[in-house]
Length: 338
Image (cartoon, rainbow, N blue to C red):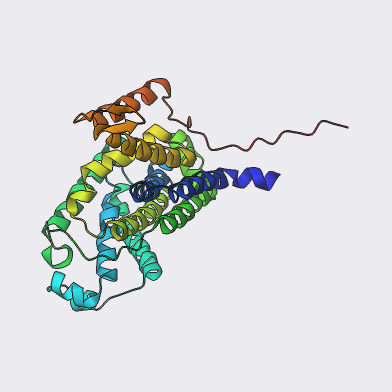
């Protein structure tokens, strides 16, 4: 019973996502693609939570690791002949590089984590608004590099030809794996030390917590998870450009985390799932919807209006997010005493 309670926060989230995926497999191809997109968002928001949720430092630049992961995926998985046409000026060792899907995902995640480790050196020494603005500067830098590095990223042109191997099952398995990684981290000694600093940084430092070191560990792990999210996105869309990883996805993933509950892993998952599914529902309403004999005519901008109204409602009546900042709990009724 004690073990069941300990692992339920992860298992419960797995069950929710698996149920959504199983239901989607019986629906239209459009809805199946919407659910794959939702699962990718879950990975991205879990990666954002790993740093921002555990440290309390809201980062506006974590999606720069999504860009790094997506472009690394393209370089490692596009067939060599096709890569020669798309990126004729690519350095030789990259032009010859080619990996199968799973090894490529691991390499992409590790490479993105290495990039995060370099960026962490100055960033984690900052706190509060300074850290948030510094990470936004990183986002702008990565976006401009991607937009102008023609030899490696095709510049502002669309990167095409990425194999599309991200199915619903693949996205579900990766989402489950990243949820488990994030949960294991937050329950680890390092995660607990960082969460103590989130609640009271001065008290944590007073008892010997190296806040800078703990933030760096979370930052690197966040980079790894978001890099996997970039890998899944690249192999789901098959084509993308630098604008896919800029302000829109940044503020959307932050909104998902805040709406779900910034202080819990359940909040990250439920926020990503609910906002993703509602966005697709609102888009359908905006384009016109038939419910039996009743027809709702589409109205331009209705989707954004409904989504913004949902955000406001949650922030007004559930200030700690949909989960209240708590993990899923398993309630097992006690047997009455004999």
